Image 1 (cartoon, one colour):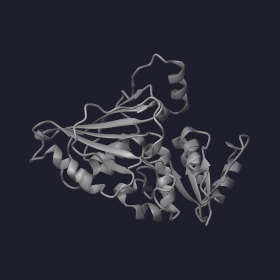
Image 2 (spheres, rainbow, N blue to C red):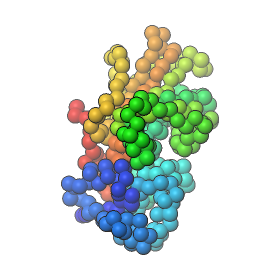
Image 3 (tube, one colour):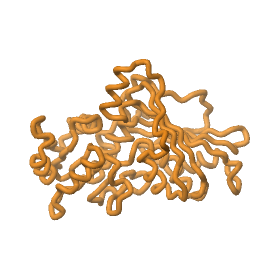
Image 4 (cartoon, rainbow, N blue to C red):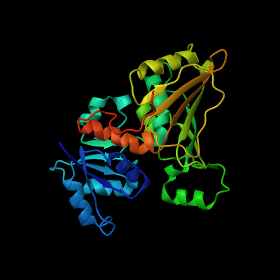
Length: 312
């Protein structure tokens, strides 16, 4: 069976990478609009309603507009890569490792996780769920990302201003990813989020530092690592590294695309301080790769088909 796919916003970074992952796959027929019709409402409406699954790679307002164009009595299902619907009622949060592959497979409306929340939630949500971390803790997140996650304007700026070595932002402490992080980790307080950009095109490191010794009860970094390893056991996408000491974690300026997600737990000698770290490709598991993973599930195909994953 061939599934008709329309990528609305196919000319953007996320849309292009999704199209690349689907280009050689015979299970899909990509519906395309030429440049003259890409922003034409009538042409978009027709393509959206012709598709079996529409993938929205659009700004939030445009994504909401696209959803309104879809006839609710028709058969089109949706994967939204924007942040417009990540905490909306009636939408499935498209993180199959956390919510279950079956829920994604059965959903009509799937909202792709954000790149930063993917790292944060992969680390924290299972541990809160298991009672190993408290839901009422004031969590902080320090993260650096390649500049491609900022869209065309930031990509242009980083290329034109090569002297930029580090850019921190969201200094109003009101980043749009905050509601998503709190809601899907089931936290009582908003997260204190400190994102930054480095002069690498792709890749990100998301860190959650924890003072375990200040929490009620006894917690040890090794316990958190063991629990994450058990939670993601058998996953072909998420890898939890063991306690083997490493001196550093790197992002490469010329990194190749990857749809995997690496998790690390580092602790001090007593185990009462910990650094939970996720490393991923912001355009892979943080965007396009996640969309293809969800698409596979919604079409009844092998979950990792077409994904770019590290070789074991």
